[in-house]
Length: 342
Image 1 (cartoon, rainbow, N blue to C red):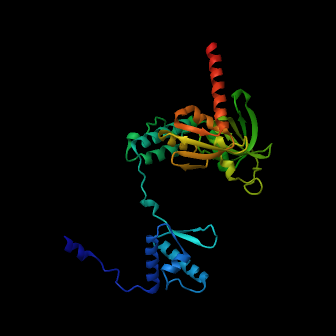
Image 2: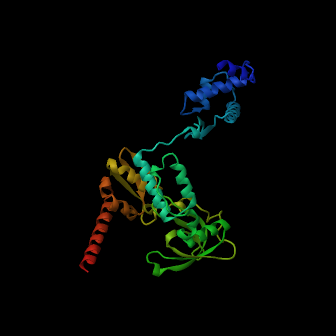
Image 3: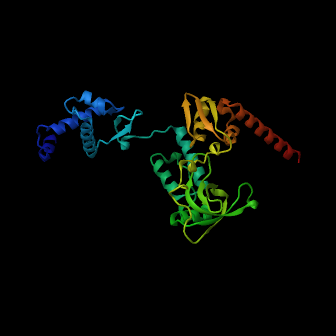
């Protein structure tokens, strides 16, 4: 059998000695394998003496750039990152993203499945349905049973959401009927839709330009009762002083500008660490073992987590957050007593 295979092989590659360029590229590639954290031009000039030793360092830099481009065409992409001193760059061989695999525990799969089911039931989307099928294609045991018909998503998701998506697609201004606390207190707003946002939390937001107040605002999507498409062009300009910024995309309640930034520190129990990190999604934090440290400009935005998982934390700082939590619990207790008394 092996002899038959050998007969079928065609001699397409003729063995020959490498030329200087090929030898340099191969040596360069092997050095990137040896140093996965990356190499600078200065370090390359030391370990590859004879290849990058031009008196003019810029000349060597150009040669290295050409070599990196050539390695990229051969399937070895290399990225570079500026150093803090600004004088040199770190060149890093990028690992093949297709070679990476995700492994989930049984509990993680069940949690993901539950979140998908919840997200789909709140805002049905065909893309969410198909993405979920792909994620659980190899083990449908953990895939949520979605009874909704993807063809009927428009009626189930609500006309308002689809009108907003149409306005975003067609760049059309809109008139919305919106409420903050109670639906009976809804009011009308004319706005230019910019984008839909969902980062952390459990709500979708519409980032839009308020035509009356001439400012960008975030509207909670489920609180938009009615949407009317307006004629004419958008007043919002994607460039200039009113252009969209990273701050516009922040929707975590703990980052709403209510007071000056306060440093918050949570010491988490082992079983509560992942819950806390999931809640803080979209909010920058520092993690050291079981300690999470971050800044908040709205301490009340942290209350939903503290109410739902009071045993997730061993301790919390600052004192103001403890006071806010205590006052909120007292108010809830008073409200409960008043309702119970009736």
